[in-house]
Length: 123
Image (cartoon, rainbow, N blue to C red; front, side, top):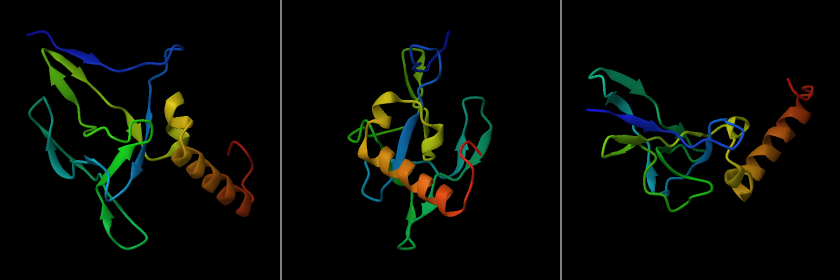
């Protein structure tokens, strides 16, 4: 059986990496614990962070697609579609995510930290 892995790319060839926003009310649940791979082995994934309230967030959403129900690989008819994502705004390359208020707020927070700690730009 032939398998194809589909990854959305940008016009310049870079991978499209979405901004993942942790939110206990979000529609996407991240996997945690031991997760099977398609090779039969298992890997341990975290998929969660503590919130300021002390709750561990394993839910969230893609900034440019807040209604999206899943970020897990989706396989149909031999094609596996991946949703590349990061909760670090510096890794994001999706132009639609970069236009969202969530992304802009995260980048502003990073700039505030950089300035407060006197870290040179680009470091």
